[in-house]
Image 1 (cartoon, rainbow over the protein chains, first blue to last red):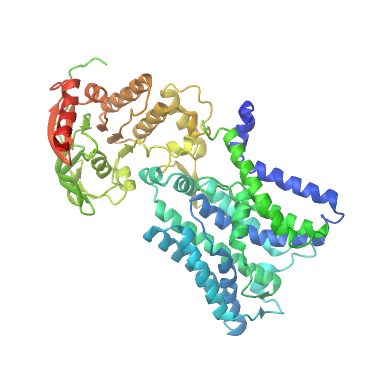
Image 2 (cartoon, each protein chain N blue to C red; image 1 turned 90 degrees about the vertical axis):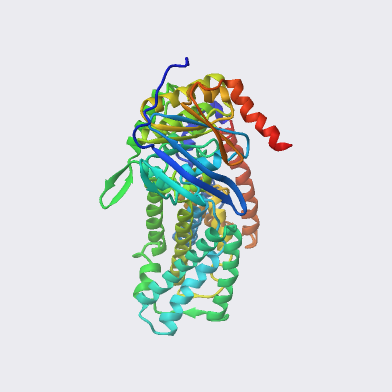
Length: 326
Length: 262
């Protein structure tokens, strides 16, 4: 069908974010009609704060998936890093900035281990990072064993990561999300590194033959992915002023879902950072929108599950029609 | 392609030289004591049956594989490649049958993969996409592929033969000294094969050393200055241009195979 519209097919190849953007518009339109308060400041606060946090995790996951690997440990890392940060500066009284730097470095260190285990031992990252998922889950439990670390008076570092912006409905996570998207959009589309990432995920053999250091690209992406997950976890802690070991549960799957809704391929070699952010906004709009129309809370996950499968089926068909197969 | 008299100047140092190279995969030795040289403006055909070690040799030339033993010399200098990137930096460009193209990248991204043109943007170096797009289009029109309208088109806009020709042109574009071709004419039409073979002769005329692996002797004979017949990881015979005909060469490759099977 799309073959009959070569200009449209070519536009889609050049701007693949168009399809998820269309999906987000449909979702927003649906809830605009079905509810009276979808665009209210309270709703916007809720959607943007969650979407910004999930979105930053999804950006890291996307860059990694583009190079053909997965990270199932991001959800646990999302709790691990703020737990270290909060333990050091709330419980131990360390300088908050130093504590933040140590915590973020520990988060990135998780990515170093994931990358080395995957590339040196040549095992699927699915397994390497599933192992890390359990390791971090155990460490989180060890560090706060079911307690909640709360900080009632936000410190300057927490304000920088999670405070309200002026009197408007928006919070700092949205600003950080914008910054992260800009940086990684630039890295993946304007710098040679983006080519190498897609080539590594698309066809590692030819990429290596053309002189791309595919293992190094993958290892860098594991670090990017883990760092961003930890950073987003610290944002969440700053915004909510507390952290539990359950923070970020299932975010590994949510981030992959956002990436796939945004057009990222599960097989590597295709994907866009902007698409994944749109995917994150789609997920969060549906989550909040369903609450607004009074649907039972548990309906959200069921709905997301169905939507994910439908979107992948549609994307596959559209991809074929746009001429993926000759 | 009428056979013409061609002489290769072998007075200077070879572009590339293998000296007493051995290679093993685990306990299996696949290359036994192979020495081989290619001079500038020389096309060397590597022939032999499956398992003769042609592809392994090509991967050693390309820096894709480090030989277990033996010396490599490039332009007279001893070299030891740790990656294909190092070999490429010296001007060794390989076009593999199955490793030439990344289907997920578009034309210009493929053409410049690993050697992207960059420009400064403040303190960082970003891709000069305009320059890469126009250079890609120029290379495509040089090949006569004028129906391609945009360098952003997907790579599957090209046929198999066109992809091989693009890969060979890409190698020339980057100032290669040595061109490695692994079955460039496999699964191509007659017309496409002719175009690939004339790309090879163009590269030769520009003074590149060329190593060509091909199963089809009627493709090797017209372009090769020297044919190296391999069997089970050893050089069986080095045949100079004009020494044997197509049928004789086919027999040489096939007969030996029957003997070893017995």
